[in-house]
Length: 213
Image (tube, rainbow, N blue to C red; front, side, top):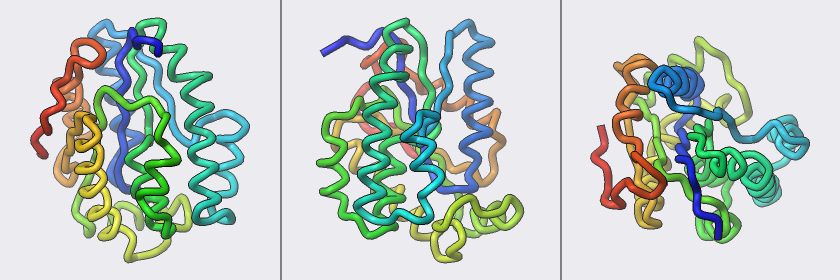
């Protein structure tokens, strides 16, 4: 298997916690420090990713989980690995942790999801952004829902619970996990904390659980 030359960081969390703003702030901060960064997202901008994003309200359950996984394998092969091979840091907005939450909201068992994603590239650092359900509901009301899950007022509390479980699952797989509560922090402050936790080189982050903040 190819030894990664760059670092792979994934950011996940419920809608409304500030993922996109934090990704932008992190990319800007790392570039200011002289790091070559490639920012990406899932679903990806490939044909299958665009199809998945466009039809996520119509395709449900196991079928949607399979689409998301297919996009992830293609995304890894065509975009993530090539940038890592160049020695770049890849920052991805949504990855495996989101699958372990969003697809479970769609009643897909975790065991099925883990088996479906058994051969994916695991990140060097998985960052899970969270907030109180009240904060998330307030932000979603101000921003507007992006998909069917965000239109359910019960989703924020369930997502917070499932992301906590996803963090434990990822740690059990040996993935370093950093959990940050964004209820009272700015994207720039959150980005600084992520940058401080990033590995100096691929695989150099300890697999001991990182303290939740």
